[in-house]
Image (cartoon, rainbow, N blue to C red):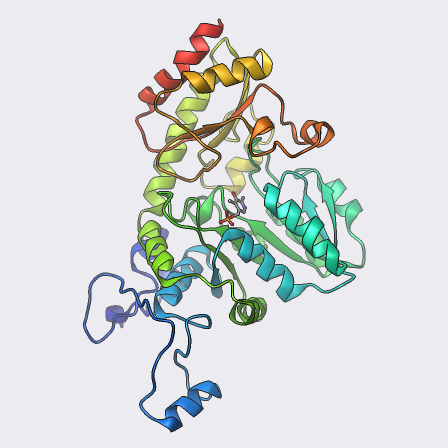
Length: 400
Ligand SMILES: *Cc1c(COP(=O)(O)O)cnc(C)c1O
């Protein structure tokens, strides 16, 4: 029972327990660590067993594009952490979104999505799904009236990322899920920024949770991967797409993510605490116009974020007085933070969204998303908060 990770009362176990224990199934070797199965295919004891496994009469692995034991261990663990019936792992976060769309939507269907989405998600919706007759309408994340007004009888999917990047805007998931249900549409939440350690959208009424495992699930910037979590019914369709079309997760990356999940709770708490300290310190600095972080009392949706989330995450937006020149000088004065567009790492990263992650947006789109020339995004890691403040002070103090 507990020896193979198949817990009898999985619902009774706390998050941190599931993070280190859920999903493992030991082989006959009785290994303590999670095993890796780097194999493309599996063998059978007889022709009859092969026939029965291919026919689906008998469970078992056939080919690693379909199933692989290491990938399945990661899927079981993440499903347990999100409180979903089933998880399907994918080769990247984008593959998770693509597989969900291919599984659930068809030509003529409409998506309503928040405007502040990850850039590649917008391209996927507009450029690629658009080619197949699926159209997407964008609304302001936190504005439920705008969501309601955008829904039509053709709307099949509502898609949101909350909190948003880098402005830390939030949507009320419970209320949004009611809107989706009234319309007979699915609600998918990209839970990349908070992870199940700090927000469990399925419990708030969402139908699907999307992950880029590349970010906090791994936590150390080592591998690309993704996942979709939800009910058996929809996930069976997502599984069919991954199995047939091929964006499957490699066993080695699944193993890395299993290691990442073991420390997810600890990391998210520690990185959020660091982010709050840095946000409060930045907010008081005379060279800073504004800090966007849902953990700050000054954030317009602080009350909703406190209710809906178990923490505020580690990504913050900082407006530096003086526009691009000042913002760039603060970046260039850092000695510790990594100048990179990535996030979700134990190493703190800093970037200028207007000229990097959001550089392809038109001026109008940037204005709508609140991406100004003075804005910096910091994805706070596990370094000591005092060292991070000192790293920011190097550039900021010169501006005052
Ligand atoms: C990075 C990211 C993605 C895409 O994930 P990949 O693993 O890079 O494909 C999707 N959504 C959000 C919010 C992300 O930050």
